[in-house]
Image (cartoon, rainbow, N blue to C red; front, side):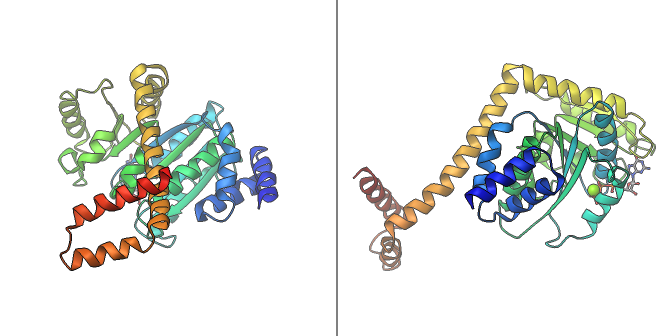
Length: 317
Ligand SMILES: Nc1nc2c(ncn2[C@@H]2O[C@H](COP(=O)(O)OP(=O)(O)OP(=O)(O)O)[C@@H](O)[C@H]2O)c(=O)[nH]1
Ligand SMILES: [Mg+2]
């Protein structure tokens, strides 16, 4: 495994398309060797700008991504897209739609589009997305777009891996400001009021501005109106996104945000590792405790306290 992954890492870093694709699959499947691969790639990460694109179904996220790909390609960046579909366990309609909207870039070898579908395990999607983003980052994609509908917990987590979060709304789709999920609102750095060729766009933008006026964070979200199908308003949207990118990279508050997210990731990984070690170490003591709890010899809280103490004592030894 070691030799194969080293070779694969080298070829992916040299940007061989087939190696990049294989690395992606390996990481997405969490196949043997995927950890080694991510380890080998890690020193090459940290250069990409990760832009989350979130919003209700059909607001125009993919069409907007298509425009953003064009804008950043024109600036000379290589662009990757991770299209996350939380709804179907198999590559379903949404992913097909995503690909069609961005199809004019399919022959551009500076653009890589990768779809991710739910596999049914909680937390799995956000971890896959994070790891896939890292592969792109290491392979020299300067801009990585992550498109999600932002409905579930998993997807809210995905927004936490982005440096900048673009929340897309559209007028007259019942997904006006009031209907936005609280978690999505909190993660928004820039709002795009897309489909501004339709009635109600000004009102939606006004509602957002009113809501933002109450924000107390050090970054105040920017609202930009656009029409993704005609590219109207896209240059202004890019300016807004770039302002946030500069804020995230260049201010103490931006740095603090990045650090708190990384700390969170380390804590998550630690939680997972600790539960594995503890389960192995305590073995049948866990089932014993369950029996004692069932027999009302002990309450579950005390039982867990005891197991924790026991685990500590064992690991000190
Ligand atoms: N009138 C108008 N239609 C738009 C605009 N942007 C996108 N659309 C249309 O809206 C529909 C949905 O666009 P998508 O880009 O697929 O939307 P999405 O948010 O990616 O959809 P899902 O991935 O399925 O959630 C398509 O028919 C687009 O052509 C716009 O600015 N104005
Ligand atoms: Mg889409």
